[in-house]
Length: 242
Length: 323
Image (cartoon, rainbow over the protein chains, first blue to last red):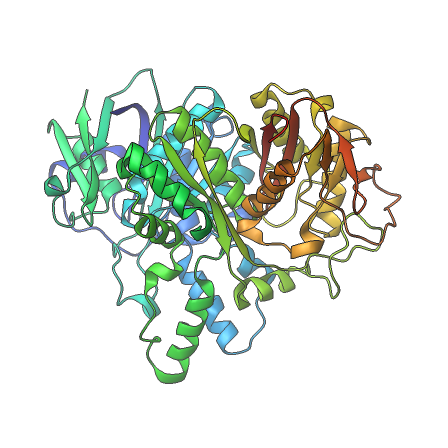
């Protein structure tokens, strides 16, 4: 049984930008959007221009979840199932057409694009991970954040999960169909709701959840429900309020 | 990984599949397969029928290995460019410390593909001849491909992963911080984690890509910690830069090196280059072909991996004589 304290959180999806928007949505979930991106007014215009939508989503959530001093101070895990798949596909299309790639396109297509941009924007020189784990990206991002806290010798860590709809060329495959990011500042101790989680038996795992696991988790965190089981393909975790 | 499957199987029989984790690093995942699928789409209007998006997902590598081994513990991929596999090993060690599992299959894999070849070409990072790290004539890296996997447990003895250090440059998306501050922080953190003084290290496996920028900053960072006497080499001229796999492939070379330690002599991994040091950089002691080092007591070796985006990781192995 693992346990974490959720010190702070922030999330962004089109139309749900502030904490009270999310509190309302968590009481009565409504359809989520796929278009739009946060403006990142706190970053210099030249820097903003280099940020893709996924980068904007994840950096916005990261900054919104952190106390001002924390953005440069916390070890961070940025997790995405698909990462910059849209940009990657457009690079692969360029290759198929025998067109040269641009240095900037390649550099910003890697899976650690968002954590790289965040570390530069926030002047954060701590350890930083970029993670992917298919449909189980959310719980393993939390686990990697715990592993980061272990490596850092304690203190809180920032974990950010974000994804966006699959590019047109890949839309036949399973995706979440929405653009979102959730950022959590977690720690082993301190103020905030304490959450325990443990692997769930295959039979307890519900069919595909309606929302991405990160948002199902948030919905549960803001509810009165004692526990929730989230998973995919017979694997998952049960999250319990301590 | 097939080479260590009997050992994985043996451990899994004892601890059970729920207590075996898989943490892998990759920068490419199945980009080569996706390249073919997307080209097929442009040519025919449909993706290659055998293609599945999971091949391109970075998580796909670890899901595949978890399915192959039957491991049912934590399973995730870390992808931080050229430090991916080193980070996977650092993370694996933390999972054991947290008691989230009793064994971890950890390492990395990257395959050659048009995406990285053209991408690094666009970054003007690829040399038109075999890489020549730390030389005044160095022109860039040579791409490689490869995979390496380790089985990590809490058992005593054998070769131990005793330290890991990680840090970010917070400087630039595709160029390292010129003074090597992030690299230095990562190396110092690995030493501190292991409780090892710089003077106790026998050998340092350099990131040593052969690009002007990496080798300049790495020379400065290494010299600041170790001075110019530590035996060091880059193995990239021998096998190319295996990118997301390099942290595990090169730690694997260090592991093999430690297994060849006999009669107080540790054979060192050679630095293959033209021998013409860059006078603008602090001088380092590069291992000659066939060189052996007298090591009587515990041996410590370190391996560096620095990913673009400013993601740095250093790993430290220890072995008892004779191993």
